[in-house]
Image 1 (cartoon, rainbow, N blue to C red):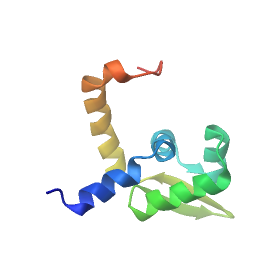
Image 2: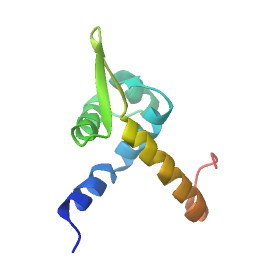
Image 3: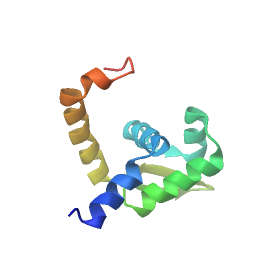
Amino acid sequence: MICNTYKEFFKAICNESRIEILFLLKKNALTVGDVVKTLKKEQSAVSHNLRKLKKKGFVKSTVKGKERIYSLEKETKELLEIIDKHVGKNFHEDCKCKAR
């Protein structure tokens, strides 16, 4: 039987918007507004997903003036690098983007 924590881990990132946010934050730390503009999503949805990612330890935030700036936790960066290698090796035929 799989431990419930594994299910909750994958459930936290198994969402297209959250994956897109993680991808964006891999490149740069961003404000909610930056994420909203880039993904063309509703601010409330972006904020909700960032809160969920933060609660589960994938992202962190700092406050600068009136803005909250989100970035990846160190472990998340390392995890995404490992996932990128695995995906690049084993899922290349599933890629629908031009980035690879």
